[in-house]
Length: 268
Picture 1: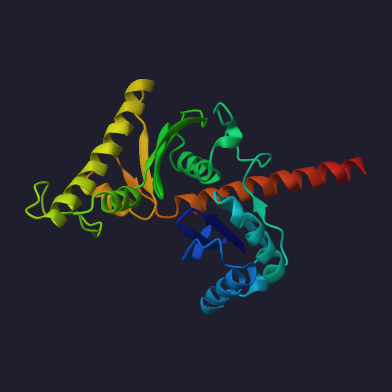
Picture 2: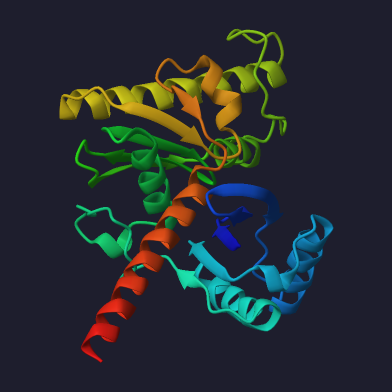
């Protein structure tokens, strides 16, 4: 079994795969102050509650965009599972050319999204991830990572409004009854919700127009299911896009490793 771990700025998403099938998953808060022992105990408990024993996990892969968490996750993988995880980053085979000015500057989660989106469509596509930031990743028809856009996340924007405007209340992010609110709460909900629908549709259309393509569009992330129904460009919501990207990258590196072993065997 493969344990895939996506460490984001707000949440850690974990999934256990048996072959290509996701058999269970969890979402935890990202807390850099927690120790490897704390995360290890929590994750092994969650796994055992779903009938997955540590000894059944024979491979691990990690995407991490929070540098202080990287040492911790490597430590708990070693201590609780006895494994060294594959860390998505420079030198790891993704099967996707990264045509960025500096490829190492692309977040590993964005590469995972791009890999999974292209594997899903085998066509020009855009992956929209509603995370701490809202990211747009553009993949060519040939399967090349061409770049993308990054906007402040929906929750960050709402929180900034609350903190900087003293008379405005903190709100729950939900779809409002209409775009014209009749009180401060509904007005903010309308502005935040429909503002993000417009942001997503506008950026996707501009990417398509600038590159003269009609691309497939898939959304992921915690708030994707909320925004997608009113978006005119999002075709599909895939909650596990990033985890699937991790699984695919692990498979590609496992195949590469096996090929290397065969070559060494022949030489020997």
